Length: 215
Ligand code: 5GP
Image 1 (cartoon, rainbow, N blue to C red):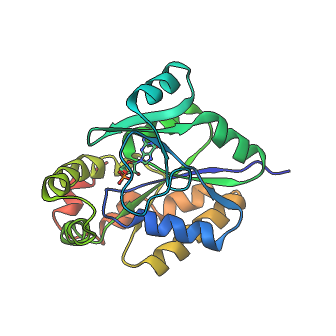
Image 2: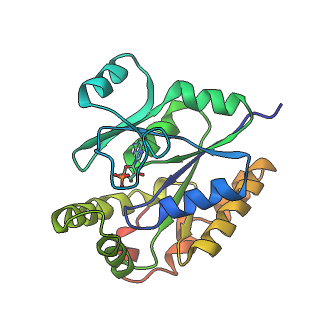
């Protein structure tokens, strides 16, 4: 049986990556979502074991000490990590596994040697990003401001990713990512890298986003 491919999707908070990831899993039964561990308190509507495994900082630290995480990182004061065993089990079962994680963790996954393909999702503009963060109403003003600051740092990592996709709307983005997944399954990863490179995508971004997205 073919082994699965880990597919990392990173994007600044507010880009719409959770919606895109949900839709990918719904449309392609061979893709499974990697459920992360986090010390962040659940938001309204989030379910333990479905959206995240929610745990205390002590329990998280124990997992770090036991080497249970393939990658882990701090984001806006909370800890997030991907269980190594859970990921490898899914890959061995032939599933392609979607890891929706921030950029620091994405770098760790790259260096771990699991052979992941790294996708970076971009908002069409900074205005769109800020509007979405404010509009979803899950975070207060201070948290929105903090997430926008982190976004600037994350944009600068975009050049380290294999492929970039601008999220103009969910439908087009999901179609584009499913095409990328199909190409990966066909062994055409290099072709996707060339088509979706930073140079190609950058031209379609408005300022100052294009300045932040650097090689
Ligand atoms: P949120 O609090 O909005 O759910 O997630 C905050 C950030 O943490 C997002 O960028 C999300 O992709 C990232 N994240 C979620 N799970 C993980 C994980 O397991 N590892 C890392 N490094 N980041 C994660």
